[in-house]
Length: 254
Image (cartoon, rainbow, N blue to C red; front, side, top):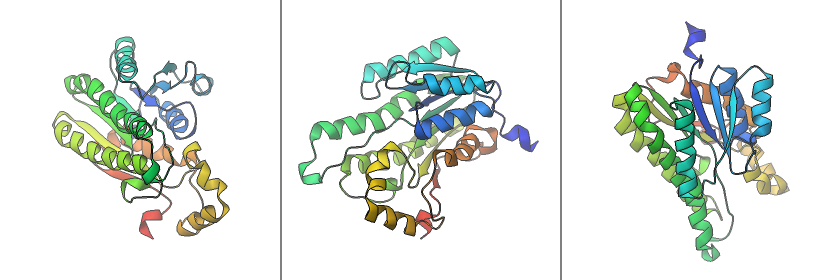
């Protein structure tokens, strides 16, 4: 029984931001658990390497492209995935961006771009896949929140605002769709080694401060999210809804 709780065989997952980093590892993990995975990135053939790894391990994967800052592109991604695969059982909104600048000088166009990619795309994709999930009577939606869903940060006002909003959106959708056996949750990664945190990793003083603050004593690696993603995608989490799961090495506990 325990094994079947985490079995994703016959499920179809759409994972954005799957070309590298957190999204790639989540896609690989869901595929290893049995899911067919539609991998999306901003570039044509951007998920080719991810799909190849899945196929080499005996899984099924598809490489799609979509510009998450463009509403038409996001809607086209959803429409293509639904048309080609007959429905999405699991949606994982990983694709995101960040722009660093003091708030007093923060360019409004960058603010808009961050909000479109991190928040609007997550809502639009959830909205697009929900009708089929409601019809079939089950579904899993996983958003990616952040440690900055809990605090303010410095020089990343748009990112912080978007991640607070993602946490709120997760709870709002959970409230509406739980009655249809759709679970909407979010993962809040701690300090992980990704492109978005490269500036912090490269700052020797800040890097040292971060490592000292984390009880686990290290940065997170992308593979550290696989277990949480499989859990929230599987029947093991059927009574978990509207939850923000911190995967942070203990950061929030200190």
